[in-house]
Length: 108
Length: 117
Image (tube, rainbow over all chains, first blue to last red):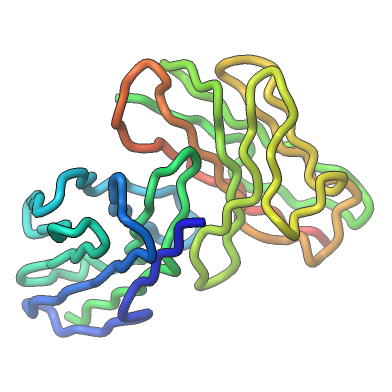
């Protein structure tokens, strides 16, 4: 089955700092999704990447999928407290499985 | 956009009773829906895949008789936690994809926080 490893597990940054979250797959990805969640709430869809080398941006969040389609990174520029939450990468393959998540805390 | 509605959002029940959680796709059809469980500070764990008109596919380690799944229509899947115990307390969340649209994201319900006392 598809195994997704996320790093780091948790991250604490000062407001205004940039940060990167990584997601690595044990197999070639047919697609890669990034979601954000606050525990106890639903998931918010951020971005979907499908092609090797693809990069997408939304506001201050940029996600990339490498050429080999086995690794993705999520980069936040000039972080804000509103960015705090759990970031999950997911791989669709029939079902949708997730990495362990990265808990982001942004200190004001 | 596509919406998945999950109900109830919170439920408290006594040990030994059963609880039913509903997951509805509001404006699209979904032959397949997915049920996840989330422990505090942990990621989503896929429990089972709900298939309309057929038996659900359970992940290894998930008790079929404990977590009953019914997918009677193209817009509704239900998860029933039977004979609930305190260790079943958790956050349960469902998702579905719009089968009419290729390569779209999965849409998630808002989740159900189950507390068994």
